[in-house]
Length: 326
Image 1 (cartoon, rainbow, N blue to C red):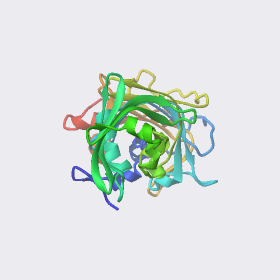
Image 2: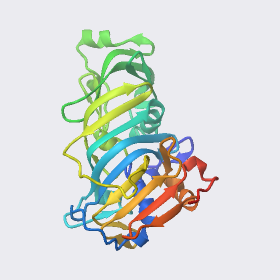
Image 3: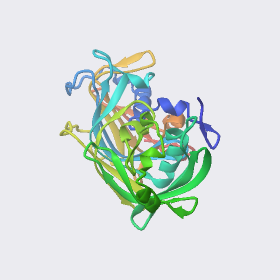
């Protein structure tokens, strides 16, 4: 099935690594580093990753703000390796991360991917914030289309999902929560959702699973805290103590750094990966667009280090008409 968001196909975005899309670019420009001579960082075939201040475009209207992320790529097959041409070949295991998504981006994600399937119960979703609560508006399809509005509190569940506990529900403009309570009917009995798209209903609570909300590859991480910051939903991922990585360019503010392990892209396989992508204009977060990565690459420049590590400097995705030079 092909679904679209304002005329833009989502099919191609379903194979994008949501948190580590940049690696495809780094590998494409980093063939010179494929025989890196630095001492190995360990971890077998699973490369380590460290990301700081990067806004990743998952789709034209969906931006994932990665304030910091530390983790690694885990092959899904025993003895295998991460293959970027096959997003199901690896998982992105998060040790620690802080990410944010605007309500506008979340709305676009829910409409363009999460509920973009035949028979989806919710449509035309609009997410916003109001007085410190998360508000959702949309259309509920139950034989006929009924407009709904739900407002509630945001929190993290013990198993690492995001919980929206409704404090008010309206259907067709009429307060519905008291009626549901009086009839002893829970929301879960009225709305059926697909768990494989990262959404579940528990009683009257809406649960979002960040491990399934985004297109493949699978993200493996536990949300330890969820909060609102203006129109941003901020998620704190927690896990084991991250691997200590020292970026090639220590003074960089906005970057992606990948170290160790093997990565395959196309017909090429990198051994002992040592790649760093740096924002050429670090005054604001680095904006990266995978669909237009070649333009960003052409507008930037690369530097090979004495130990064969590679640093690539690039402009923001919306500034490729202004090439950067050393």
